[in-house]
Image 1 (cartoon, rainbow, N blue to C red):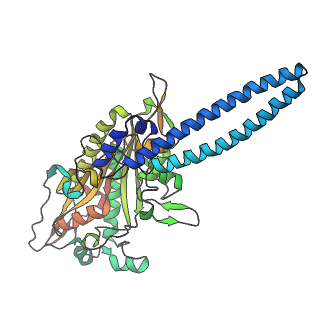
Image 2 (image 1 turned 90 degrees about the vertical axis):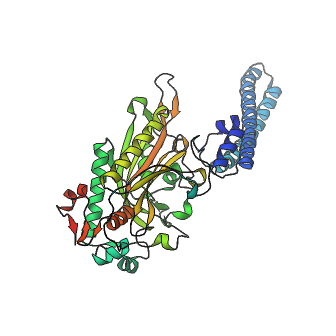
Image 3 (image 1 turned 90 degrees about the horizontal axis):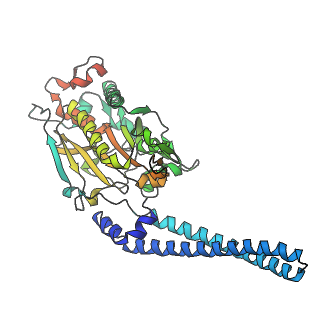
Length: 425
């Protein structure tokens, strides 16, 4: 969430930067400033009336002491009128503050200076690409055909049990899922990330804290009876561990990781992009989260990108890293790098990770601060997160890129996690 101070002091800058995200903020910014001016005026009136009450209270005692009963009673009556006026002003202040909050939470985060201008994924900038394993097979199968051939994933059974987008992993397919989760977690903890196992349902305050609410409410599964939401990513519960917390400056960097299933309605998704594992309603993911000092958050972002890159390199996959343009960025992000792996069977790129710096946007909603050791003031921290990694499209890419005439070769780094299995036959 942007701060009112930033909007008041730099309205033209805010409008200009949000235009990079193709968001017209001019009217909203003007409304926010007007509401804040009204709030300030009400506060001044409240202060003046409270000061007057304080003065009258002192006078009343003195007047009674001087036997000036009528004047004392008149002062008491005036005090009563002022208290009633303050009560009305308090309600007006509450209403204005509520309107101000509703307006400001609808503004996206400002994009960083290096975010490219653009409207769609076609305008993203490839910053690095590297070729990995290339299948020797001439007639390549897509992962859903391989999953059926080797009895790894049962899409029809998932449809029977729940519905489309909820696959059932079978036998070696399930073992491959578990192997990838363990591999990703082991790499994360070795890199200094503390492992958590958080709830997979969160309350409304948690959804608001990381920016899923109210922006992505329609994309989340909602448990109405208990007013809870199934998480779309472990980012939500893990980052909310630090909601309403003041951390020590010496605590930085705070590095967390978690494996969770993730749930997304993906309303409106259709066509070839949703076939097989391309787009699911439930999937597994290992997430990394960092709470950082503002001066070091972009260094931390580079470190997180390097960590994710080490994972796709270890798996031997062909990949590229893209910097998202303004129109393709999330509501909360200041800068995002996506990782895409090449799907040899489908002959297309599949996104497997987004690594983002949110600067103070989430921290302001979370009231996540740190104590500056020099100034002794509390300052908003920076938050970052990344997928390290999401499993479905990684599995799709492994199946398609490692297919051979004899079966599907298991990437070397996964062999120990697969009980020594080197090829899926």
